[in-house]
Length: 229
Image (cartoon, rainbow, N blue to C red):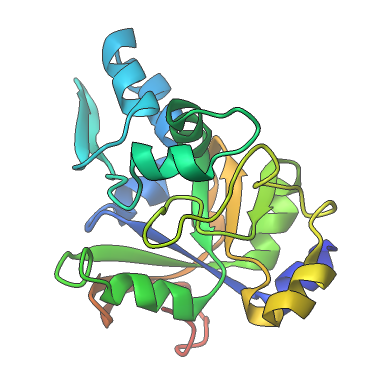
């Protein structure tokens, strides 16, 4: 796949965050779970638990002089289901650590809305960031990977996953997946390794959401009012 095809086919990206987190994300950047733990100097025992185990609930991280940060749960996965679908000799702990090293973005508005309307999320407030794909890709091309699956879910029939689940844009076989699934479903996730410190430069709009009911919080000056979740 080429960069130009990626941002032409998927001009916008979406990120789900904790409600009220936009000012902190705007000022400090968007961090992977692993990067958050580095920044907050979390001790090794707690770090290993957070990075290598399933989180049934959100975890709040604190450090004196810094704002509290919430690390989101990973309820849609289970160790048992992961053992059935993991390849390349990976363990559930390996997979949790792989995910915790990345920041995640949806490429499909329809998928985002299905997730927001799902039982686990429909009554839980969220902050939704809408981003400019071209801007983010050009700034972080060396750290971007694509996935053909929802890598953080094993609900229903767990899809196989392993060392090749995340691929660079250049290595991603978009043409094959496009023929198999259709253009809009050929890429499911875009991830940036570690962190996006300049996230504010790529955000077009921010909305509060409860289910699929949205309230605009912020919009880039001059941005089309129709762009959003």
